[in-house]
Image 1 (tube, one colour):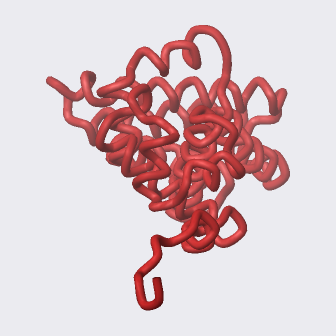
Image 2: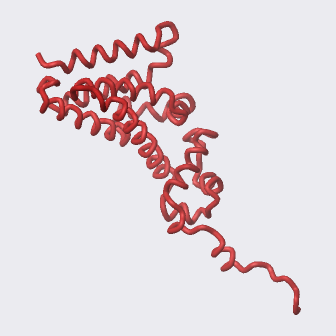
Image 3: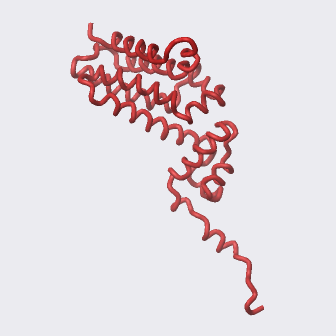
Length: 210
């Protein structure tokens, strides 16, 4: 009938939704972050992320084939940003060894204060266990790259003892990782700053040239 309102067509609905080309990855990852903070990693779904981002599930599927790939990209982005902050905090140190020590301590502080990391450790602890007992994950490999760069700079400026870069980097990673995972329970009866001071002392002593 003339003048009667017609329901919007499926084509019109599709045109009204943001497409994968128009939605940035950061928008989707920001939505994933909100979902993880609200529900934890294990209970976050692609459907929930799509609803939070206000996009269709197909738009999300075109960028990320499954929830694991979204969460992996999210953790890489978040961890990379924190590592950059940690590196900047040590940038004005006079030697590469001092930069590595300062950045490592800063990374422990930042990761322990980060809401996303705290949610993973407090709510989804079981998901962390394989990356401690069985294999290294992408975020650990990313951290190791930052460590390697500073070690190589220290070998060049003479502030870090020359040894296998791979072995030194892995050792530093394991020490820093233990502080990240255990700082909260470890500070139940020992001051956090005292422990972090000991971390700085141990790293500095281990890396100082003989």
